[in-house]
Image (tube, rainbow, N blue to C red):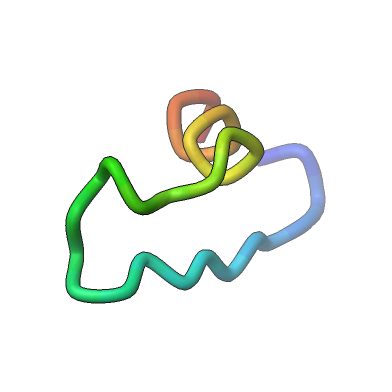
Length: 29
């Protein structure tokens, strides 16, 4: 962990609806 928590709104849960920043943060988690 790098010391912060990101809350990502994913709508109905479809990964295609995530923002690019959200996808990057999830992939680095």
